[in-house]
Amino acid sequence: MEVNDKLRMILTGASGMVGEGVLLECLQDPAVEAVLVIGRRHCGITHPKLQEILHADFLDISSLADRLGGYHACFFCLGVSSVGMKEPEYYKLTYTLTLHMAEILSARNPGMIFCYVSGAGTDSSEKGRSMWARVKGKTENDLRKLPFRAVYAFRPGVIKASPGQKNLPGLYKWLGWLIGPVKLLAPGYVCKLREIGLAMIEVSRNGYAKNVVEISDIKRLAEQRAGRAFS
Image (cartoon, rainbow, N blue to C red):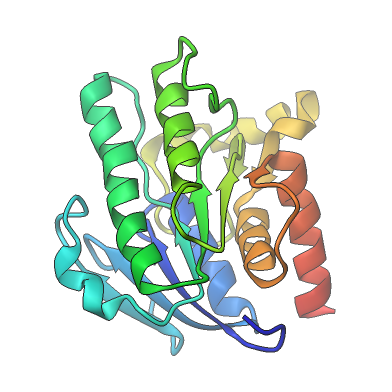
């Protein structure tokens, strides 16, 4: 896209903590023209830039394909925790689901940027002992094989929610206060949701030299985007 063009983007996971936080940044950023949220339930936000498609089965979005063209970027914030889950089920809900949607989007949108929320510690070798890290690693690797303009795998660690967010998991409501002490002990492992949203917009507008976006990269990109958009 041209530098002066505004972003038309697709976002998933808006009814969850990460997706909601990223969506709030997109709606505020002057570089974003339109956001199409695809979700199983309403995200609870209304805005002139925002449209929603409700769809129950993300393992089969083929019926939506004709409505998904004409977009510059996808911010894929949909995900599940691996806690208590066997590998086949986690694989289906992480790898299979993500690649299915990505294949449809890459076919409909030549030149699209795909931003995937992965996680700190993801295993790019796909051979480590951690089940979730192997699956996330394979997902990252195979996304990069699709005909997108670029794929960026975001690997946040501990994430601090944005003010005013509604879609917070119960565990975060109880233990969110621990983020402060964690940041003091390991500042390089904590980032804000606002930073993730700004960083995604920045790479979609201006690219980035690295396809794996670690916490330090997220902070750097967010600072660049804030300087461009709100100075």
